[in-house]
Length: 147
Image (cartoon, rainbow, N blue to C red; front, top):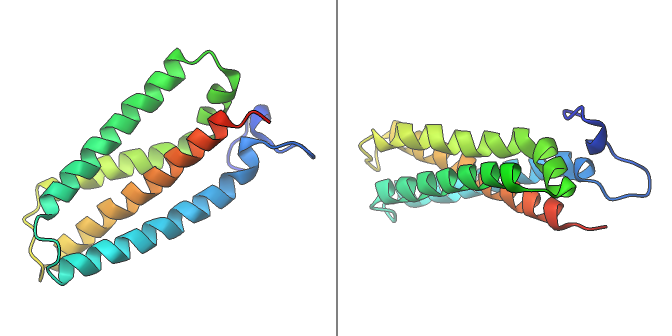
């Protein structure tokens, strides 16, 4: 298991955030690939004219999630929230920072439907965005799980 914290390890007969970590990562990767394929196909076929607006929306969402997760970690007095953030921080921050860095790279790009670099950058940003959404949803599920 990637997370070495004792509170993250699976215990027999109990629900624990660490138990679903591998499944969440796999679901995030699959969702990222599917979302990327859809966005890139729409972009290449000129159904998406304003790719810069999509990138800005993804970038702003990633920044909001970054500050929200940091605020939850600082303000929270709930042990379950602390444990879930510690256990899921690698996948959560991979999605957030991947979206931010690829979004910043994409903002400096002039998008054209026949440009391969534009499609790759838009696809990379979309992949990290979908992965971030799945990670945040899993964090919410883990934090609100009382059993």
